[in-house]
Image (cartoon, rainbow, N blue to C red; front, side):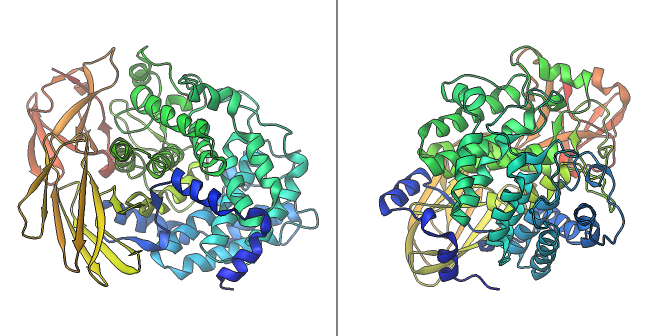
Length: 595
């Protein structure tokens, strides 16, 4: 059933309605808005290739296998092979990621226009609904599952996207049914999770983002009450709002994704405290916790800054970044910060880090196999290999789908006066500027090359503003040329603001210089460095085992032999350096000792 505007307004009810002044205030809190998935398509390049591969992977998952554990719990016929690993009836978290697979498929379908994704979402939601029974209990059972909030949050995410992106008619009603079935399992108040393994394991504080959204869709006030109740104020948000640092020792991913709930609280409640929270958190994460890749949290735990713990982690663990989950949290946080940026100058650091995370974490994840093996931890130690997590269907199997399906959201944002271009990759976006339909395309081999061509197609000449992010890392000013006009320069770390009466066929060429640079692991170990070119981290491919002891004159000694391939001579052999995201099965080294 297609959802019309009338049926949508009727379904949300009066409880979700906002007076005009409240709507205006909400718009002021979000001056930059995400485009809908359907407005943006990737057209070529490394992000597009990864997007297509992951899209196909999740579309190929067997529906009966995905639903089997739910049917078993409901006492229904359950055809299909067992999934194994975390997902099975007696697994670590039975059925935990179904909602994320539904969510990711709905997002893929919305941007790509692939009706097969929407059909699969319908089948999975209907299959899930058939297992709820008279008590609406689904997979959640107190005697067999330590993670009811963790799973419930994923159910909500799947049903929200099924309703809003795949037009599944009963998904809104299912949100309330699933909540009703879980009420006896929900704690009376939110609680923190300390470290990686210390109980309580459940994570109430990751839920408010989806609870606020579920309230907006259903009008059910219980969702709103729970969202407010589970905000992690005392332990986490309040210290961050005061400028403190509650990160050291905390479980990394769950607290990073909780920042999305803080951001949603700011947009929903209007309390500026939560905007202070995400701004301070971003500063702390990117200046004290982060590897060069954009990842953080060795052994899933935030480090204590200024003690050399990132460097120490290179020797003490191989589990440096919980990659699909962590990149989901990091990209969502960056987008919330872009959307709520009151000062446009802040768009550059937020966009720079979003780009860094995209290219060096999620794009660099090892591709999953056909039977539940997924990449989990990035390793930045010497002579490393990308490997699968030991157990099948881990948490990262769910966030991989969602993070990659969100690639289109990272590219463009509607601004108060036009459009902001954040990420440079071949793509297209369509919208209406006033009453005029506009299509903007990017054509580029960035980041392999430096130049991006932007072309406009308009229904009629229209005046609006295009802003372009000039990255902070570029070694010299970007060059911008509009049609045949003289070239203008834009300094590193600035926004290039182009306001004009645009006509169909207008063309903008931006050239962003890229060069190699080094980034220190931390201030106590300045000799240990990562090699960066533009937004991309480079690693040594199949290096000698003794490379870690060598002092290399990076980056001045590198010579290019092919696009994205550089070499350096070392002790009679040639060292090969390639982007970290290009490595799948080879041995690599990501940090080096500089001369």
